[in-house]
Length: 317
Image (cartoon, rainbow, N blue to C red; front, side):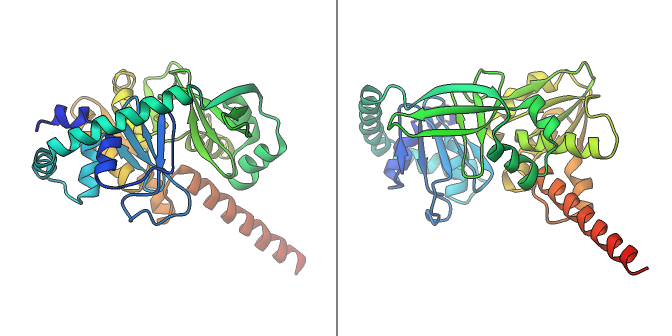
């Protein structure tokens, strides 16, 4: 079996063969508990985009296509092992493929739209603002400049609201204290400030955290261009925008998915562009951080402790 042939097999059919159940599924996406730790989690964190046939595990911080999934599931970096595994099961996978396609078609017929957007408005909801400023430590003025709040209803009649961040494909990345998801089309977000330098992030909370850190330090945060992947599975989609910039600074997450994506980035651009890993500097200051928002929270906590210590010294005088 070739790589292209394997990529064309619906991932849902591979999951069906592996007896990995989906906790919920509609005509566009399916959710399952982390398949790389035996599904040992209370809330499903791995999403499959049925139309694009890609997946992303929020708990692992990693995603990709069928090959990426099987490499991780089979715990191998050897592509030939994955292709041999798929080739030995191609007849069985073909059977499961038809079964799953029938199931997806039924879901499409029964539930053509799993949600409806009720309204999108400027960010002002106290619960969402508290989440951004108190939990995430993000500057409110910056958050309001790049985010909105969205209200939507599921097909079952449940109403939800969240912070939303628009991508270039017309979709929205959603966050609140309890959930992390996308609505409409998944895509990258680009911000062009007319600079020859670009800073790359995995998620929009890291963008907002980066800007907050710059603002707190009295530095400009609009002197570069920005690209937000919204999932590492979108890395290749960012290449046309990234290649326009001679200098690329990456702030991708420090987990396995982020590290692999940074390696791919370097391989793509290191011969023609200046590529820098900005997370290395942040990790020298705090080795335990996973992303830029972690560092912002760490910095805020350290500053607060210093202020407390300073207050104690003054009170003892």
